Length: 213
Image (cartoon, rainbow, N blue to C red):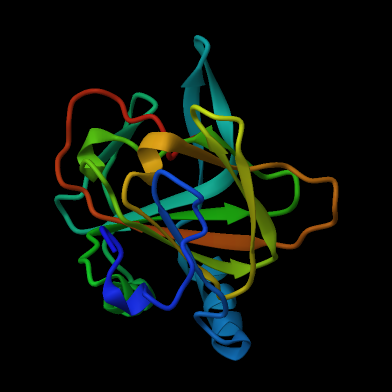
């Protein structure tokens, strides 16, 4: 295995080519995931972000919060973001995820999808400050939502249903070749929280392109 570690050897790489993608279903059992969902809903500093698209500022269609080490500043869509200090729960979650990934993460982007109208546009997490082949660990709590991957060069799509307590790991060259999105849906959906643990390795002056879509 090139990027993901041997602890994932028993899990299938869901990416048919050009990267590594592992789904650990029920990484947290329902009883534990229930507690995290309710606690994170009320304890994180959720806010509405604005992004600059086609010459105008528009609200991001979900709520967001950025936590991390003091030097894990992040810049995207022309806006600088300084991380809030880790909460006790986020620290615990980080430790659990780092044990599986065998990589240290210094930041986490939290997204709150309030209902089916909240979404995330198609993008790749390929900012320079994430390094050349970033490993990103994505935890899901709450409502099941579809995450769709699209290959940048060939007409291949991959649909993954992320459910309560699941852990998705993206690694290798995945961000160079695949883009992903969480589309809107007309289905009745309750709240979903997604935590994407990352490692910021540098802070370039140019705007990053992914997390705010």
